[in-house]
Length: 105
Figure 1 (cartoon, rainbow, N blue to C red):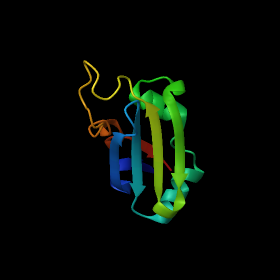
Figure 2: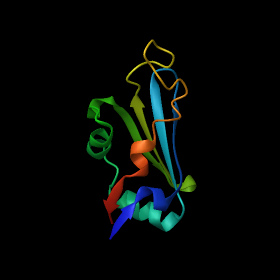
Figure 3: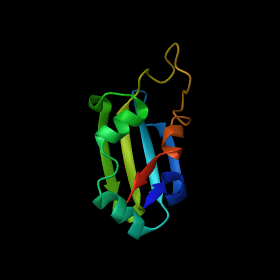
Figure 4: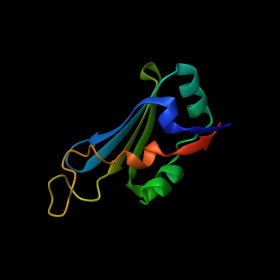
């Protein structure tokens, strides 16, 4: 069955993880669905890199945390927070590509 991440998660957000990294949180509505998502290995470095048009080497971690029904993805920021040309100092506006993410499960 085809799902939209937006419909399956209570929270999809991005934020700074220090001045040189961004972190993305996906917090699912239901524990059973979170487990199925993780067991199916839906969010891989290859998938996230393609979604964000970045190198897989820029992904520093994809971690599932069962007690919170959450998946956390951390990447190297393209520009340090506050650098000249950087347009999202807090990293709070970087989650948009995840909102439209669709997957089969």
